[in-house]
Each structure stands twice: as C-alpha cells, then as structure tokens.
Length: 571
View 1 (tube, rainbow, N blue to C red):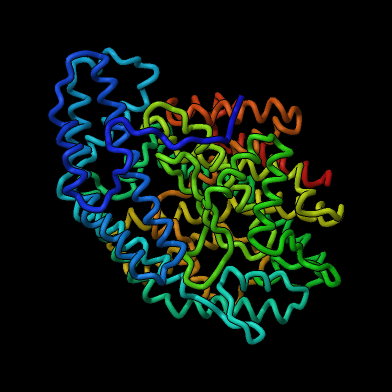
View 2: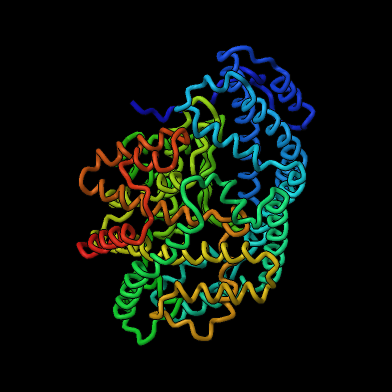
C-alpha cells in the first residue's frame, strides 16, 4: 500500500538540530567517517548509512539555497547564500567525498556486500574516483556559480503589450491570439528583447565552454563531451547512438511534422505559415485557458492525479501542505520549470512559470511525474540508491503527460476543448523530437570544436537548425533572431548535455502509454515498479521493469511515431 505521508529521514549520525552554516561545523563528521575503523560487514553497512545521512543533509541544504535563489533572482542575500555554498562548502566537500569513495572501494568487506543490490552504486563510486581531479575543484565551483547567471539575466527579461509589462513566459500567451497582427507584434517583441542580451549570453556561454573544456583536459579526456558522458554515467549508450537518433528523427519524425504544419496552415487559411502562427487557432476559436492562477492549477492537477491513482493526488496534496510549490510566472523569477528532490524531506519542490496555457498543464503534470518518482524512491536505504539515471527520470515525467490526458476533463469540461487539448499535446509529442535532436547535435559540435568563434557557433547552429526545421514554416527575414535561438535553452547553460534524455524518455513514455491504452492498471503498476527501484538497477533493467525495450533505433522510433499518429487520427 503506497502512502504519500512522507516522513523526514531521522538523523542518527548528525544532531537533529544541525544546520549547515560554515565548513568548520561540517568537517568533524567527514573526519570521523574517514578515521573510523571498519572491522566487519555490519560495520561497513553502518558506515555507509552514516555517510548517506551526511550526503543527504548537505544535498538538501544546497537544494534549498538554489530553490530560494531561482524563486527570487533579484534578492542578493539569496544569491550570496547560494554562492557561499558553491565557493566555500562544496569545494571542501569534494576531496572528502573522494577520500571516502576510496575508503569504500579499498575496504576488504566491500566484496561481501550483496553485489546485485550494490552493483550500480559501486559502479558510480568507481566512476567518481576515476573522474576526480583536485585541480578541477575551483573550476567546478566557478562553473556552479556562473551557470546560475543565465537565470539572473533571463529573469529580468520583460516586454510591454497593451501598456502592461509581462515576463516572456506570460507574453507567450499572445502567440495564441486569434489576431494575427497581435501575434506577429508580440513575436517580434519577445525576440527583440532576447536580442538585447545576446552579447552577454554569448560571452557567458563562451566562458562556460572554456572552463568545461579545461575540466575535461584535466581529467584526461580529449573533449568535454566525452568527459560529460562519463560523468553523467552513460554506461548504456554512446555518442554513436545519439547520431543514430538524429538521423532517425530526420527519417521518421520530420515527415509527420511537415504534415502537421501543412494541416495547421490549411486550418488557419494561410498562404504561408509564419513562426507566430504555429500556436494559433483558426478565427473564432478562443485559445485554451485551462486555469486562471497557480492555486487553480494545483487543485485541478491534484484532482487529475487522484483519478489516475489516489496516491498520485496525495503526493501533490502533501507538497502543497508543505509549501513545496511555486508555480506562477513573475518578474525576477528564473525561467523554466523543475522538480527538485529533497534528500532528507523526501517530498520534493516544484518550480515553474505558469501563465494559464495548456503548456503549463503539460509542465505541471510533467514535474508531477518527477515528484511521484521522488516519493517512490524515498524509502530506499541509501542516498546513492536514489540517484537514478536521468533517462528513467524523464520517463517518469513524460509518461505522466500521456497517462494524465485520459483525465484532462478536470481542466476542460467542454468536449471540443478537451479534444483540442489532446490534439495539441500529441502534436507536441511529435514536434519536440526535432528540437531535441537540434539541441543535442549542437552540443556535440560545440564541445568537439571548443575553440570556435561566436560567428562559427552561429553559423553551425543555423546549419543544424535548418536540418531539423520544417520547410512548411516560412522564416524569411527572421535570420537574426534564429541565429541566437539556442540562447533560450537553459540546459545549454546550466546542465550541459542533458537533453537527449528527453528523446530517449519520450520513446519510453510512448511505450508506457501504449500499455496504458490496453490496460491502465497494469501500465501504472509497471510505471511504479520501475520508479521505486530508484537507481539500484542499470538503465536497460529499469526500462525492462517498466515493460519497455531500451531501444532508440530508427525502426523502433518509426513504430512508435506511427502509433502516436494513429492515436491522433482517432481523436
């Protein structure tokens, strides 16, 4: 029986009231673990539990600093608290983490641990030992601080529409306006505003690139891409698989995308489809407005999740009670959306920038899927067991987008609107693949050519964008906007190489949705079974636990795309 009544982990090693304010208070616990003798398997397992508790305390402290800062990028005190952790605490933790990792690997009793239970955990520990270099500590500290500047710069971006100031997320609503002139005007305003900071964002990215490349060289890698694949624990696929994915998108997804845009052009009665038309509805049809504010979005999502499975709804209700939701867009708030797991509390934090659109419903149920994952993995014994691969994390979120559609009547009481919402969501399932391929291919190029100029970066970005752009959309005269289109993708700045996961996971999510259409109960059971394993199994084994194939070959992608297309045709 699943319960959302999540309890904060009890402390046995650190005092219950301990809060992290300075390194001098934290260091004695590392010293104690480093010096403690381990004379039996039982003592090793206790040492692992104590190490895990220390990790959880530090992790949650860091997470809260980041959450508070992204919720209010204009508050200098919050920014300083985050920077203090990254510059003063984290650099001192890293050598100790390496020391403790080596102590574990060298311990004679480690061989007696249950090898099935500890396989992925020990594999990660060994990987961390291999990648650790003392010389990278100060560079990583700088990177952690610099990466957050993207949110600070973007959080200040606003435009004026009809005499009122809007964040760019809020202004995007006008791109759904039935009046084409309004859409075009707002499209230009948003892109012109982004352009004002393009030089600053270019400079920031160049600085990040230079430091990342140095980290890779220091660790003995030829480039940052190869280092990052190792760091992300991509044990089960290679760069060649990514290139194969890019080609499969061109072969099997782009033809469907072109059909969708052709249909859009006809529905709107246009001779040419422009980028500001893509989100629009035909004249006389009002844009979908599934909720008015963050409170309504929360309540409706809880109701939607409850219909799927009461436990899912209870998880969100618990987060609401704990104040772990910040959903509405506002000036000074960092862009994007995330679910931040909290290692001690168990109940994570959802951050997003809702502006009343269907996209916000998708984001909310997506982050809600991540939240369910956090709840299900919380009971695992060690913090390291909860460090699941990002690919399965995104299966958790993207499957929830598709499962939840069966219960979207809580957002859309009108049958025609509900049908439109589902159509738009399925369109997005297909049209997101070219963007994933674009961002991923761009990252491979960027880090394979670390000394490129800004001009070469823009030129190669345009070349890649063209590969994955539909010829149905007319971009003429918009070249300058497009040359800097990559700058709106926060992953490039904050979490490099984290993007192909969305493509791999979308394939898994479609596979689970196929199961759901046949037997919802069984699909949800498979979903939960995979998620509660956390990171205790390999990625292919986690896919298998969900009843899925770990496969992103062109034939498999083609089969799944045809399934989505068939579902769209039945609506």
